[in-house]
Image (cartoon, rainbow, N blue to C red; front, side, top):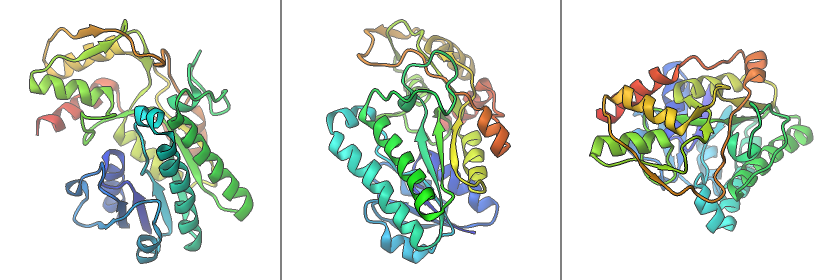
Amino acid sequence: MRAVVTGGAGFIGSNVVDALLERGDEVHVVDDLSKGKRENVAAAATLHVADIRDPDAAFDAARPEVVFHLAAQADVRVSVDRPDHDADVNVLGTVRVLEAARRHGARVVFSSTGGAIYGECDAPAPEDAPRRPLAPYGTSKLCGEEYLATWNRLYGTSHVALRFGNVYGPRQEPHGEAGVVAIFMGLLQEGGTPKIYGDGRQTRDYVFVGDVVDAVLRAAGHDGGVFNVGTGVETSVLELYAAIAAATGIEREPQHVEGRLGELQRSVLDPSAAERELGWRPRTALEDGLRATWGWVQD
């Protein structure tokens, strides 16, 4: 099929591009390169340097049958400092992608977020759990989901939203609003000292990027809906750091610093709906994913 991947020069997007090319699809990447890297885009894909808030020319050139919408303003801190910018990219940008896709009759798979939408979790959160965003980023992603659902009702489309857990793996950069795995590994490689905020007992649901790519591709064949993409397993920051030490072979005492205001203490997703309806489940154990990630960091 002809596919557009917005944000295809970034961490998750470039991995999606590689998987699409491997199965023989024609792939077009739409990325403004503000965060993504040109070198992440495989030579067999066509790169359109464009902003998702003005996607028409790129979409008209690509004529997509499916759109994997992964481009976003993903920095929680930026969303707090500049909520108007966050909404401009994540809400209006998504609306413009939806309209560009509609003109070409393309199905959309939208990357959303679990932790930032559900807020504090008492147990693995199913898709119908209360939605309590603590930052504008979560709210803007939730708005994107609602626009997809509205387009499905209004136009009879079959767009799908995926709520990701804490994704980690090769090509995640250890800077900015990067995941903690990339940050810790980057510091360990450079001889730095990782920081653990608070007591380190806060938990997250860490899911390997290869498993996320599998879910994204499966979602393109489903008739609408919202699905969690996580492991259902909680891992504390302390446990994660110990696992990273084992994967890297580097034992270095972390620096404990004061906790950050508003940080979630418990975030974990229930992925059973994705297994039931998409035939998807996570297959990569944390220790295996960390070893693969460390191998990429060292290259």
